[in-house]
Image (cartoon, rainbow, N blue to C red):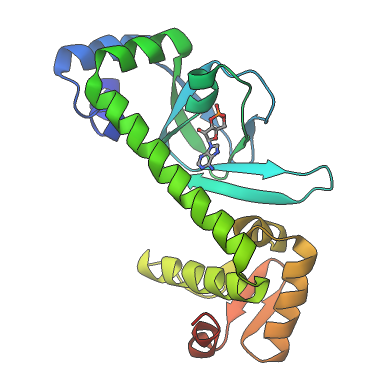
Length: 224
Ligand code: CMP
């Protein structure tokens, strides 16, 4: 597809006219990352905004002990890397490609000239930042007030229903305990303990990196 056509499908660029879009296309670079590549780590200097054309990026924070928390899973049309550009500080989190991923990137000067000239782009960025802050507030509130058993049951139901709506086979869920822990702000050990409880109650069956939900109705009852 023509790069200008790709830009027209990305929300922050969709309001650009043809001329602005083709000017921007000349200032944007393209890069591909294989599944599993780490694009950058927290603390590194950041000089570019990335826009996802295809694939998926996981934004996560990690501790020295190897525990991780997934802050966001971003897909086609979404962007990341704006925070270091906006406040001039290092990268606030790590970014990894969880699928083969293709990105456009815009350097700092082009990012600012684009934002300053397009009010709609500024609005779209502010709107996305608010949305992310809301999600992070939810995650923080849950991690603070809800038991792990509740958070885990809710995430398993969500993953199960997500797979079902996407038309994929709902069973089994292919996910490591580490990833699952990162999604609910818990340690791998506590997820392992909780999965043992669910297994003993006959709600799930687990094998290497696979979780099969055996009794969805009872699992749902745990999150009421
Ligand atoms: P930056 O700090 O440059 O690099 C890491 C990027 O991850 C950051 O910009 C944001 O684009 C993104 N990011 C950081 N924290 C969150 C969050 N809580 N939710 C969604 N995206 C985030």
